[in-house]
Image 1 (cartoon, rainbow, N blue to C red):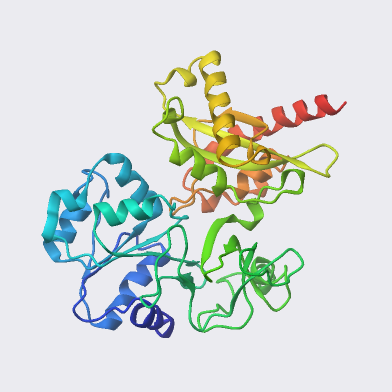
Image 2 (spheres, rainbow, N blue to C red):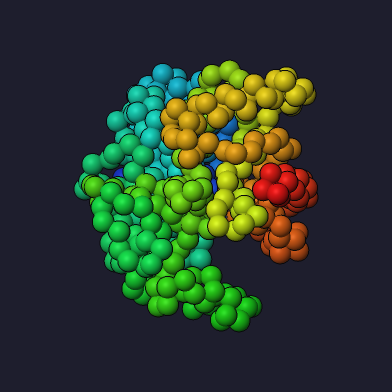
Length: 386
């Protein structure tokens, strides 16, 4: 692991003893190891415990106070910072020494790149992706390459990362597929602690024998970078048109300032199989501000649904438009705060609650609502096909 982290920090990140490294993380997340691994460069670390947004200035005050040069955080935090209205550059000016902003946890929206440059400074924006079980990266930042909005700059050195189609064949640049690693690598685990080898094999090697199938649906850009589109097992495929759920989330996020879309707090999209089993429709589940009219009355919610469908159709395509839009109390989150889409898809399509590993979620109680919604939607589809 030290060899892998050395490569990521020293070669990809250009980290040295003059840097001050910060990564907002809990000790239970793989990014803790990424943080501690930065000591290989001989640079000091800044640790912080507490809310990153109360007040919105708190992490940037730390950055100014301790001279942080590499600021590691999540895409969700950067989006929340933008919405807060706090501008680090305006508040702190030359006190900021940040030269890199690293982002992980979920895809970093393309429109946040210019916002970071304008409101933090001329930094390298490094969107990075890896995995908990390898505790390192498959793709991410690279000081030797240009940064392009919405893209991970490059696949990492020493990792035979490829993008393949549903038949396991490499896709050309500009195509979409699933992220795999075709050769062994130093931090490949030997197995899962306390479990037999079958679980490990099924998790990563059952799809393409001998190839690490990571389960991320991505686009391989013409520049050789990657765009994260969502989890492969949560990819949407209505009418045979395959796309990632992030394509819907990005539209909603980009229009959060437009009423009534500004009443949406969070969302989760999933595919619901038709009774015939040969096609599927898109379901979009929304968490709304509790005091908004759309959360209380039918007419206001109908107007919100129309606005959602209209903006998705105009900014994506008719295939992206959700067939069903429903309200939910909350979306399921992993222990690290990431949106968990796969349980939603399973429950909407009739799987039992016992089939979901609730120990991986911080709010498993929310899943009961998805069982009920799934039953309702399947009845509706069954009735319309009769």
